[in-house]
Image (cartoon, rainbow, N blue to C red; front, side, top):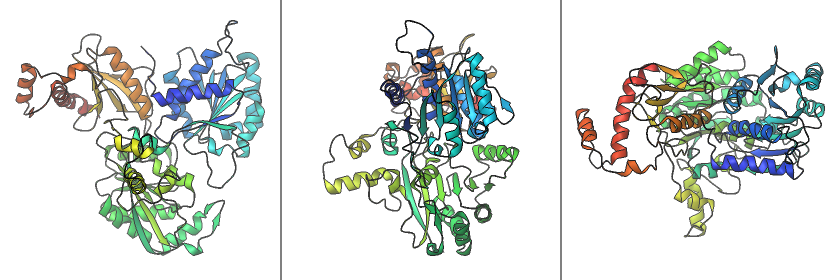
Length: 554
């Protein structure tokens, strides 16, 4: 089977990191928006790093460092997600282990480590000592590297002074204005949210300001660059913002699944109570919610039994629910990075998802609050209520110049072609109940009829599976527990390897006339084929068949 196929910008990113190392930059950083596949990038980069480090005396490109790799995550629950993605990319003879709390797989070729665990001198010494027998750590990758100014990270870096480093994040700025220049030497590759939207990799986004007249922000104290959560929570409670949130959700987002961000547990609970009373089924998550409860909530959210999740700073990072299309910013903020993280949770693409909606709570003296303008600083000065971000960019560009200059971001946005599923060249389809699949053609003893994505045991993750028509479904080994972009990429690899015909959207066979047999079969199923080409009729027939078999599995 061929390897996972990277998007062009992901390949460019990896090349830029290696070039920076060759140029003597030991601590480069990469900035890619939520949904850009950051973990896919550094998983492939680990493979390439180990290939370059192959102990071949004629390999003049090799770095003079160890071959082992350490991946630092700042939250324990992110470790298992990273391990699944890395294992799906690396050869089977490369071991991937976890160093977190009771897990201590310090002899692995690739160690995914909790930074809280390695902040302990004893645990760092164990990793250092293991290098005597298993090789030195030659590369440290820091996920969500905007946290890296904290003392816990510095202790880890100081313990492995010879290792190369890479920082990966969606936003390198910190809300508390702590500088990161002494941690990361140079941003060697970045893509903006608007660029990702222009290429169809992220959903376009619109905003609606929700005025809370009784919310007076003048008395809310600020520290470290943002409002104090306790003060802000009390101000929201006193203004009865919860009832306004519920009314606004019903008015503007009644058909959307959403995430509500609040400053305190009390405000998260109050918002959920009002939303439930208004008929919007809502669950509450906080740092105290048990793993079992979270699993149940995430499953309800995935299946649509729960329409909204109300949370207190739990879902700002590392949460993947691409079908969610509404973010309620009931945690007004002065922090551009925090605002970007919250909005980023609903920008991922999903079949049938036309755009994302952000409901921004505003009150008296709220002029310093972050808005959609801050997703792309300096590009647009104002986004009107109900206006898409791209529409605002194009509008302002045309106000300055009736002919938008070629090469500008506004020009790219005007010409954008958004594919159905993450800008893919492969023909993904969706069953009647929403199962994502690729039709691989007639099945036989070696070939599956469909390659499809099935929810993994871990919320927000996916397994790549195959099914023969009338047979049993099964996951492909090594391709389970992946985020959506990784699962999609591996699904495409499997489908292209096993397909009886080309699964690309651009395949020439799709442009021909449908056969008499196709038309007859479609007519028998009640499908109107008027004006359809061969590919469109094939898609309609495939969706009908796949719905019969795949919908019963989910």
